Each structure stands twice: as structure tokens, then as C-alpha cells.
Image (cartoon, rainbow, N blue to C red; front, side):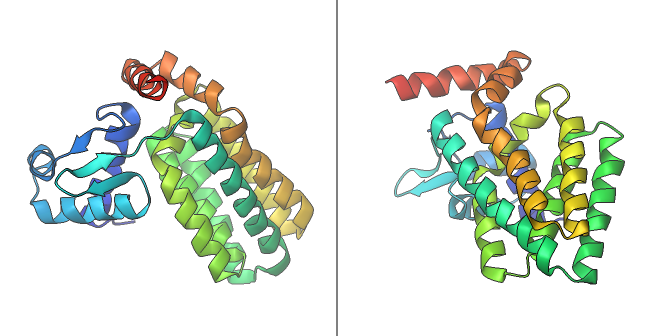
Length: 233
């Protein structure tokens, strides 16, 4: 699927945040970012506005864009709430999705499986996002879908961390298959429970996931130390 330039830049800036290239509380300079990515300031500004709307950065007078600071506990709380939203989406999809919506979910699951087989974690992340959005749509409740997507966008860059943990991609794929199977079977409770587990594990075990990821990624480790130092201060 083709992405707009601002969307691509948004993803790149998100990756800078989650990798520790820019730290929580750091300033994101439009001119520097435009030079870094070889673009004009217009798509950079558009990307930053989107990130600000999602709560990932703050736009402050006279300082510009500042990377938001979330503690690990705060992120875990956000993921817990998101898990409940997504579980409702899965439950409603099992009860209300029509044939077109179900086909969209199946097709998205197939793309996830195809990418998972290659081991490409970055590509899998985007297909994973598309599958969750297909299930949102299958809930047949536009307001619920909008609210779920808004919260998902807010934690989006941090959720990427989990896929850096050894074996998580394969486990995620198995969980997706269980969710979709329950939706196809019209089993609302099983769909809800499977989705709740799938998303909640990122919050319940966020510290373990974060520590495992940072242990194998020096840049993430530096970001973790920097973030904890700020929280302690």
C-alpha cells in the first residue's frame, strides 16, 4: 500500500523515538529533520502535527516539538485500556461482521502470515496494524473503531519494541490466528478473550518486554537509562 510522504516521515520519526536516537524531552527541529530526510519542511511539519495529535510529541511555544515523556507504568496503563477496547472490537466482530468485513480480516491475516514467514519484523508491524484495523472495522461500530485507533496511534512507536524480543513475532502470529478463528466461528467470548490476551501481554509484561529488547539493543538501553534517570529526577 502506497504511503504519503508525511506518513513515511511520521514512521521514521517514530522509529527515532523508540530507538533512542531522540530522547524523551528532546526537541525535534524541523530544519534538522528536513535535512536528515532530504525533504522540505512542509511534510515534516505535517508529520509532527500528526504525532502531536496522537500525543507522542508536544508542540510548545518558542520551543517547537518536544518528545513526550511516558513512564513504563504509564505506558502499561495505556496498553491495558487499549486491550479492553480491542477486545470489545473482536467481540462485536464475531457477532456483527458481514461477509465483506470478514473477508477483509481474512485477507489481512494472510498478509500477516506471508510477512511473518520472512521474519521481517518491520513489515510485520505494519501488517499487524492493518489486521487490527480490519477487526476494528468489522466491529461495525464507527465510534468504537475511532477511539480504539486513536489510542493505538498514541502507543504505536512503543509497541514496536515487543517485536524485537526473540520469538515474539511467531507468538504474535499464532495469537492472530486464534483471534480470527474465533471471529469466523462467531464465538464472541473466545474472540474477546484471545484479543484481550494478545494486547494485554504487552502491558502486563511491558517491563520484561522492554528489558529484553533493550538488553539486545544498545540504543534502546541508552534510551531506557536516560528515561529512568529523568523519572527519578
